[in-house]
Image (cartoon, rainbow, N blue to C red; front, side, top):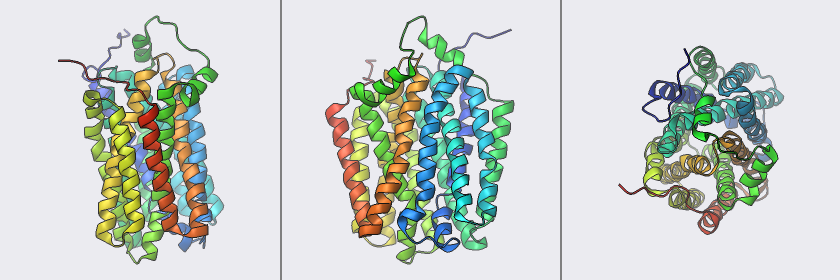
Length: 408
């Protein structure tokens, strides 16, 4: 007997909790690379130019961005669960390729598959949680989703940093990724349930957009709010790409040991992850726009401090601020997309938004890499800091509030 779907976190607590756990495993797949790959590029493969080292982030960003777009369309056509399983199948070979890579081309191939894995799995878990949560607690749902993912990135980052320091860059750090992929595939195939009917229930019988081209243009350019959210997402991941690819290299050149570099990377990610437990819920009470504007400005300030200051404590404080600013922005942007997009085309709108957002990895790799090679890493950080602050001002000027606090 088929049950009629019900909306809301309480009504779907078991499946929602399971999807939070699955997204933690998705985040862990990303965390295996945060410290190890920039250092592997220099120490194992002799890549010294920033643009060469950042090719893995450029590849990852382009593939993930494109996969995000198709994840939304495919999940509308075939259902959420098959897309989630396909993403885990793509992720299975990634740790093995990184462990056995005899040259940098293998690392690039691994990041192509990682981009597919992250685009399909993370996008689908976001869509499924929005399906289950309904309109009232959407910010909280996105906060829990993103917190689980990025806390797992943080925990895996610090763990792989210490594993690399004690046992070497390969294979120990990547064995965690192999375990994550196997467990994620097993849970998704055996226990996760389809949620597309929840979106249909929320949509009702209202006729809305059907053309993917229309949805792309609306989300990217035509709608002031959706396009403001999309550009902010792209710039947010632009500066995260810099933090991923260049900061570990800068810290090595300043004499920090691997353990401290892993700690700094994990601190940023942990504040980002934990902060979203609060900011997602706060956006349900205070609205979305203010958190996005101030979050982007906080990130710009943090990057300026990193470029200007010197020393472990200064960098730790700045990275904590960078994580806090990102926590203010990350779940709130997704919740704003969910507020504006109709349930019948919301999955595709999320896919378009995530196309732009994760395209920021590729843009960040290019901008930061070129500026770093020409003028140095501090100048690259200053450049990205200015772009991040400008993005916050664009949101302040163009975006409309999408979720006003309801009266008691």
